[in-house]
Image (cartoon, rainbow, N blue to C red; front, side, top):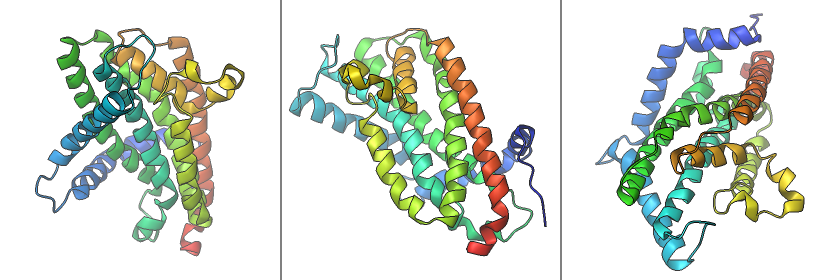
Length: 271
């Protein structure tokens, strides 16, 4: 029986060894999503624009929503959209993770295919759409304010810890979802709950102080707040917090990878 290494080194080696395959499969997935549509890949650009327009209208014109210290309704829409970019990246990967193996049965039968790259492919596709959304957000803020803060260049560093956390959870859920099909049904509820428990539609200070500790246990809270700091307000991120988050995320990534490698031998038996 073939043995699969679950060491941290194996996790890194798998990424480096298969980076070209991951890129090609991610590209194919992005293109395939819009295959057959009249505008093709242009939808990846128009979708976030339409989403930003809808949120701007609903929250500024209908709900008259306000953000502390922000008087411009259009700027509030940008704040909201910035939080949704981070949430959408995370939720898309996590929601798809339980069915990654189930929807790629043909790869399971191929002994030489590196199944562990499937979460990377999913993340690559989500990152592409997140990047387009960031471009739309920055364009919106440029028109609104007339300039951009140089700290937008630090956004990848803010996002990096979340990417490793997402990968760890994706590996674990991909494995569990193969053996326990109910995981795929329940994860949607969890992801939806995380949206309302994240500072997307309201600032963290609006959450009851007695429960704020639990609020910050949400892995999205810190990243969303730091993303706004660098993208919208021109502040440096909390480097110490990011360092702690990165260390914890790398550990979670390795745990998820190790679990996936230990359980993958049984995938073919349950499919």
